[in-house]
Image (cartoon, rainbow, N blue to C red):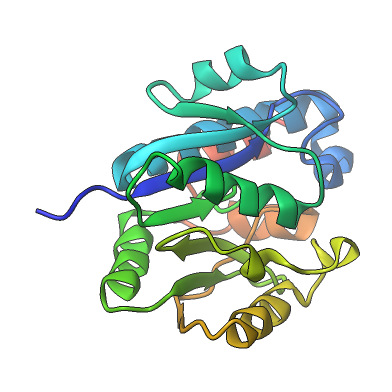
Length: 215
């Protein structure tokens, strides 16, 4: 039987004013924090099902909060720097002690299921160097690697969060001589338009629907 992969969640603690701020007009700061709690717990459960779970969190004093939401996960505080710096460090930190491969997700795609992990792992087992799950906003919701590779995350700091993250990542992988696999596209939960779409989607997990409606 193949070894379990590392399954990494990168997440902010569910604190008012720190998380899901683009949804504040809909949910308020407290509602955003409640939604973030549900999203972190959902992503951590996905990671535990997909492999050996890790949660790479910020701020660094949030260990107890994150442990309560991700029982059994190995917790690692995020490094300082751009999102690219933090993603690269997450792979380095986890794969320093885990044989890999590793899958990394955020918390904004609660519709992820076992099929997403299986598809990503199929890519990696077939020899692909990096596998990516495209997000509808131009970024990605999942990235998988056999081993750390900072080149994949070497985007300008100002470009993270923009609509060209996926395109730039694919270009960076190509420049580094890496082969790339692509999963099906999914919608991230970032703003009110995304919230409305997820409320209308029967595949949205019930706890996320409840948190969105509570606002």
